[in-house]
Image (cartoon, rainbow, N blue to C red; front, side):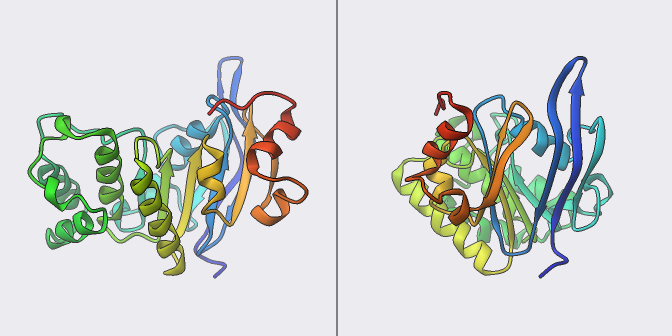
Length: 239
């Protein structure tokens, strides 16, 4: 259980005089659902962008299973990520999008029907991406992340746009993935949703970790994660 991990070591990202990520240290083990929490602009997305090879750190390292993302061969077979929208032309169909993603990593096209079924958007197979509702786009992003049946799943604001039934579906989906030994990292500023599924959490504010631990320990003496945040920062938390 100790080998399949995500490790961030003294991860730092600076833009001129602005420090977006400030010496972040994390160790996420196999089978864990780990919540990266904080208000908008806290540094969550910057951390994930570095982890997924979309940005370079100013210093420190971000490793997935002992490797930088850019060094992973056929990355969809190792890491699945739903981050910053679908990222495809609006006139492309759902099936076309998944087919291109699968082909890029040598994944059999039979997997497309499987992930559409898992995410309950099989009926949208031939819909254009531009015609999808926000929640359907979220499900497509998750379907794309699942194509390679990866060990690591990384989601940024995964419940954004999902209706109540979609949120319930996502909770069950995430728990099932973790029970199958997958490692899950999700980032969100909606604390109530993260509280419902995570094993461990870390709070980030202004680029720095201000608290971390198991959900049980973090909640000790508090009713919910929102109250924890108020206590830590003495300020408002904007959901």
